[in-house]
Length: 231
Ligand SMILES: [Fe+2]
Image 1 (cartoon, rainbow, N blue to C red):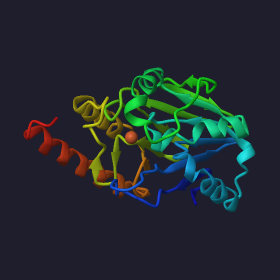
Image 2: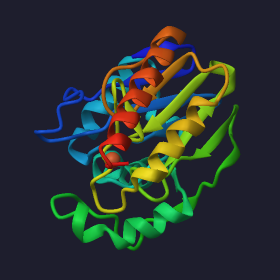
Image 3: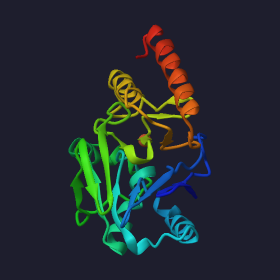
Image 4: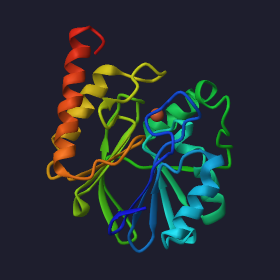
């Protein structure tokens, strides 16, 4: 569904229930072409493409795929978008390395990208795509090379699994780092003017009050976990 002009959000039906088959939310940014953030699981791709078409988006217009991180519930469908639509696949250099290091841990039940799949490096800073310009922010903690995306024109922040509505992301998976996650949350909280936050799982935060309330909840959770020696 379109949330605001140029911003499309496809929520995973599982929401924040991580007990079943997990798939990430997908976010699509529209300029002259389309940038897909976290296309999700391969078996969900046909449904995603149908929804895109229903919303007037042409998959042939996909220019690039940005992966907030390399977990398969976010990345598995990306190579198919490269093969079918010629999309460039982008993730951070740290995460590209982590994808290789962690394949046996995370991809046992998923399709691991073959050697023919090329991932371009997408580093922190200003990133330009056809008709689009936004900021890539380094936000490690859930994984070593996690990225978030801030689109100032839309006051939009995309966080991957760094945090969700009401809670921080998992820190106990291989490659997770509690201290880094805390610093990354603080880094995003300092990004000014955010009025919409789209996370890797769970519902959209669609106004300034929701965004502020969510940071309050996250900071309270972090403080509790720090006091308990978890962070
Ligand atoms: Fe993840």
